[in-house]
Image (tube, rainbow, N blue to C red; front, side):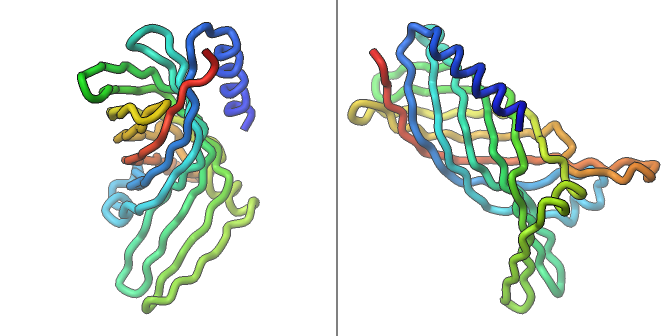
Length: 215
């Protein structure tokens, strides 16, 4: 959590010293989330889940075409494990801060953008859902269970493309992104000779609205 707070404070400091007109906004959308395992046999079992995310966006121009775009998101990731008798789903709820370098190209009707950069995330909570004969049972994981099973912090890189459509005082935004987790989200048994590794993988689609403030 300290890492995320440090990033937010640094972004606020950059904003206060910036002479450019910044934009603020909200966004939300859907995730197609999965977990990639070092053990290839587990990859054949694990399946993707559809989840959601929402949060705030700040865009800080550094030139006519380049800007820095930090975001603060609540995002759900996870995986499902289907079985002949019972289907299990793991939902992991993260607070996530991507910091993206954004390049924007103007056309006659829309602005097209590409973006990429790192992200840091904190696992705020998790729950498991089991489905048997159409009946669902949700089990919330307690803090001690999360701490013994998962790493609280995750990090990685994210990139994508999208477009902005001028509407009213601001822009409607549409984005498609892919998130490649680099951190091992699973805590390995120190007594095991071969360490397990699991990494988040997320494809997302989003819509939002950005409005300029200040000048």
